[in-house]
Amino acid sequence: MSLELAIRLTEVLMGFSFIQQSIEHLTLFTHERRLFLIRIILSLLLIIGFQTAWTLLLLLLLSLAILHRFQGPYNGGADRMSLLILSCLTLVHFAPSLRWQEVAFGYLVIQLILSYFISGWVKVINPDWRNGQALRDVFQFSAYPVSESLRQWSKSPRLLLSMSWGVILFELLFPFSLLSSTSLTFALVITASFHFSNACLFGLNHFFWIWITAYPSILWFQQRIFESLN
Amino acid sequence: MNFINSIKLLLPALIPSWNFFDVIASSPRIQFSLLKSENTPIQEWHEFRPRPMHLSFIQMLKRMLWNPGWNESLFLVSCAERIMGDSTQQLIQHSENEILKRIKKDLLQTESEFNVSDITYLQFRLIFVHRQGTELQKEVTFISRIQPLSMDNDYES
Image 1 (cartoon, each protein chain N blue to C red):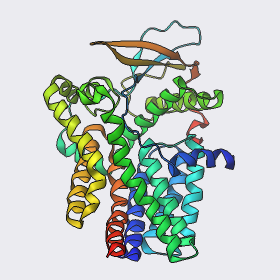
Image 2: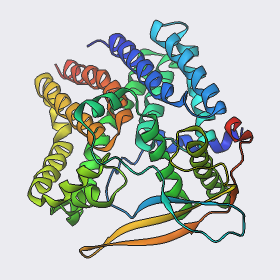
Image 3: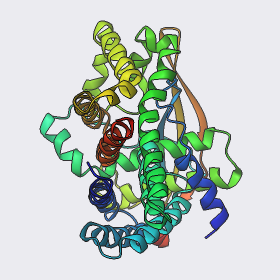
Image 4: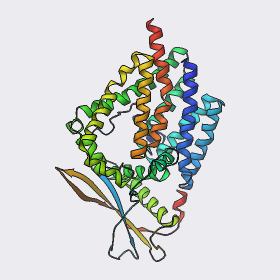
């Protein structure tokens, strides 16, 4: 995938993802509605490719206002990934040369890889994750399960132990998927399924859409690395 | 807008830690009470937005695109954690206001099971649930100020 195509795809996916996040705020408070209505308009401009660099810059400034409004991210990690992608894309458009564009877009890829690897690392060094207790706690008393019936999963320790190790292993092994385009495609299907499960079980729908937004960047990166090696 | 403060809030996004679910910490629950006057003793605490008993797969799929209530509830979890975390007084105040405002909105705007016509005040408390050995422990960690439940300009803020 060319750099140009990967950047454009990321812009369009981010535009749709921002619209999905923002529409949810239109049911809430007046001041929030104003902020997110502007975000929807700017996201539409981004999708159609109107003055992309300036649209991205305005979206970034608006994001600062939204951060200020909520005194931090509204939805934790999903908002942080949104800001990271937006910042990298803005830097890409204001970068002075192709090399610096690659550096800015590459930074997004490095963070995407780390988002899986570090998540796996912090789990594997925790005995509660290794013996399945942490996931039992998630289902038993954390704020995340979307229904009371899902809390019953905490009574299936073998299932949760398998799930814990499944998550730990795929997160830790994710960087190795860059070895070939086939393995990367396979890994991205697995990770997308993981985010989809989290969206269904824990209501983390924003995570699903925004992480997928970063996938074109890693597809470009994998190809770029192998081109430079050959 | 405090621009420097916003830049400080942006930094964790530019250099993220990515330590999702590294430890399963105590989990907050929000309960509220409705009062007829500031001096009325609290009769009963109600759980704010109790989760449904069951969600079908179709409902889960719909929530992939439209999930405002749940995402707002997750924001309130963050607010509760900020209140009990190592936060500044300003951030604690902001979080308390956000929780009070959203409980009020639910009570006044939606078809609530509570008859709020003769209720004039609202208060909430935070209960943190954690596991000690094999048992779950619940601890009341914060009780909010008493807030008038009038339909005022809160919807503008």
